[in-house]
Amino acid sequence: MAKKQPGADLPAQRVQFREQTAWILRALLEKQMAVVELTKENFEQVVTSNPTVIVDYWAPWCGPCRGFAPVFEKVSEMHPDVVFAKVNTDEEQEIAAHFQIRSIPTLMVFKEQVIVFSQPGALPQGAFEQVVEKSKTLDMEMVRKQIAEQEAEAGPA
Image 1 (cartoon, rainbow, N blue to C red):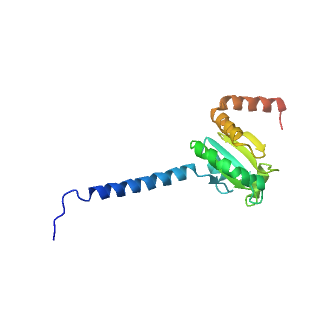
Image 2 (cartoon, rainbow, N blue to C red):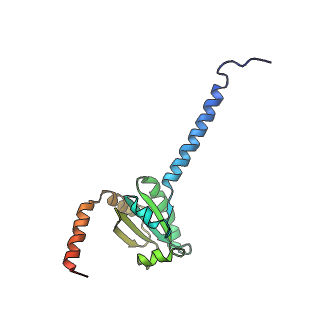
Image 3 (cartoon, rainbow, N blue to C red):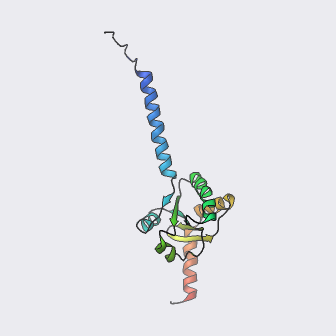
């Protein structure tokens, strides 16, 4: 039986290690960039445990929703620091009713659990990117101050 040279398996082990590392990194990136499906079971947890959550309210039969989906996915990949989520309004009617979704698609941005943007209609990619960027830089202290002022002006409910 021939003796193996010390380190003869090293090149094959390095290739295998690189392949495994690449697979793990791809899996982590895909998980990080994946769009979250929101249900009544996880909605509150996702919104309260993340600083910025962008929600697309949609339905499978909705043509504009299907047209906006690739834009939503692409922009989500550009912003791994933001949670991008979708609510299927056919399956999650309680959520849609709670947020008074009357038209789909509707885009809603939660920043520190406050709705800072809500608009029906599919946005072009550039406009959607602007919404994401502005939501990331929004001064929430100022937003909360404005909300308090509006509530004070409205008086007791």
